[in-house]
Structures are given as structure tokens and as C-alpha cells.
Amino acid sequence: MTALRNLRIYDNEVGPAGIDDCTNTLQTIDYVHHESHQGSHFYIQGFLELGDTDVHRVKMVTPDTKRWSHFVFAINSTGICSTTFDEEATGGMTSGSPVIPLNNNRNSDNLSGMIFTSGVTAATSYITRIENDKWGAAGWKQTIGGGSGRDDEIILKQNTTYLRTFTSGAASNIVQFRASWYEHTNKNDIPSVESSSSSGG
Image 1 (cartoon, rainbow, N blue to C red):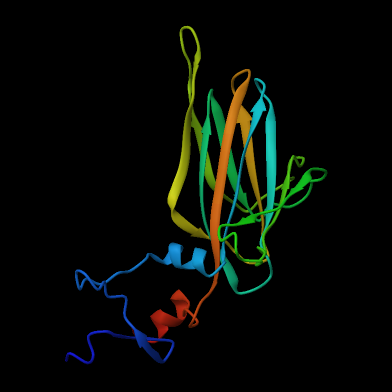
Image 2: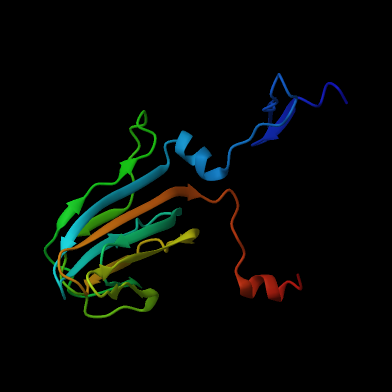
């Protein structure tokens, strides 16, 4: 048993376990941290100032590969703001400027497969509205802001266009946005619900 306590098995190979020499405790990092070390974790982050009733849209396109994006985001504003996040958006979405995602591992040359365009026009349709949110209020002397986001990952569909829309409800409204994701290929194929049910599992 002593010979095994410092071993671990991964990808059919055996290597040293992460045991701390001082405390003999197992040292681990979470999976997102692991993806950062691998150079597979990316982000975009920024802000813009919107006037009352101004609208800003960001188009996201995922690559046509099995290297899926595990996506989280956070949004904050100094005033009233509403936002939507639409999946399989089509039509419109012209103009705009490209936004290049950054790698969290600044020693890595890996590039994201996601394509972002900021400042596009409205889409003509979409299939699924993933998020529809609003926050803030008109205070007595000043507007009240707020925010939204999610820590649980959305695994985005491959080869799909998404549209994020911000609509300001206040003047001089500073909107901050951060999106982060890692790009990962499943080690094993995941059976569909139909095949799992038909197999009696």
C-alpha cells in the first residue's frame, strides 16, 4: 500500500500524485484551472457607455468542431439595463467590429475557435432565447444599477450563431461585460437520451 499512495492513473498512464510533502495531503486544482494551464481557457472583457434606450449587440459564432465551448458570463451596469442571449440567430447581424478573445495562459499561443463581432445590427430571428433579464431602477436622485450572470457552464452548440443584446434604460449607463470559457473535446461520446432509454439503462 505504501508504494501505491503516491501514484495516480490518467490517460492509461501512471504518474506521481499531487501529495504535499509537509502535510501528506492530496493537492488538486479544479478542472477550469486545469484548462487554463493547458492554454485552452479564454475570455473577453470590457465596458461601454450607453445612453437611455441605446442598444448594443454582440454576435458569437462557435466553430464546427467537437471542441465545445463551456461558457460562463457576468454583466453589470450603473443604471437600468436589460439583456437577452439568443441561440441560432439568423439574418441581419451586419456591420460591427471583431473582438479577439484572449488566452488566460499568457504563455500559450493557442487561439480560440470562437468568433465575436461587437456592434452588429439586429437579427431577424432566433430559435431559443437562453436568457432574458433586466435589473436596476430609477432612484430619487440617481439611477440604481445591478447585474446578472451565471457560474454554471453553458456548453454552446457547435457551428452555431448566438446574439447577446444589451438595452440601456438610463443615460450615461456604463455596462461591463465579461465572458470566459474553455474549449474541450469529450474523451468519450455521450449517448443521447433516446439511445440510453432504448438500451434499458
